[in-house]
Image 1 (tube, rainbow, N blue to C red):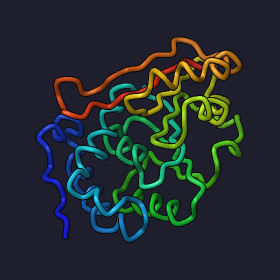
Image 2: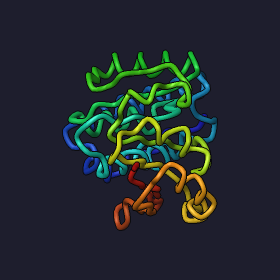
Image 3: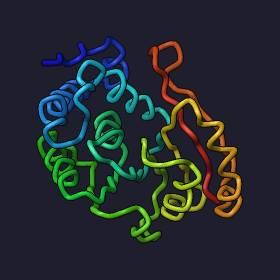
Image 4: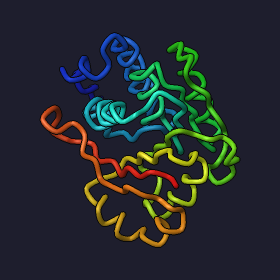
Length: 208
């Protein structure tokens, strides 16, 4: 049986007083994640570094306000960010019933009072939701995410989308959608430099 990756030292820096809650969530995900189809069978030896820390690094870009997470799935990054930033309100948007149940159960068990779980596809959510920021992780290419996500963010709000090493190429391929949805200040931000081996790359853009 594969063993859970030891907790990295950087976790204390990222979660602060919330570290015990992060530990409990990681334990729960390690115990039930594969059974519920939330993570693959090879993820336990890299669960902290690849998923928990990777998600938590995004917390530094969040404002105090209302943040949406599209395709929350296992709670990556939504639940992790809700743990790291109890001062921010989160709306976790997830269409699959079993994943919605997981997100609600974990929110209750971990006593996360800053989490709302919405069962829906992003494209079916009313723009009146008026989010200040919106994130997504491993959902789709930037060009496809823009029409799904930009309408849910208020004017002047931000998309902060977690991406891989091809982030710059995704921006190049999304120029038509960027113009159509009046995005500005589109940039790639690399988080965790000097802190972790596997940094987190984010496409950040202001919604016009």
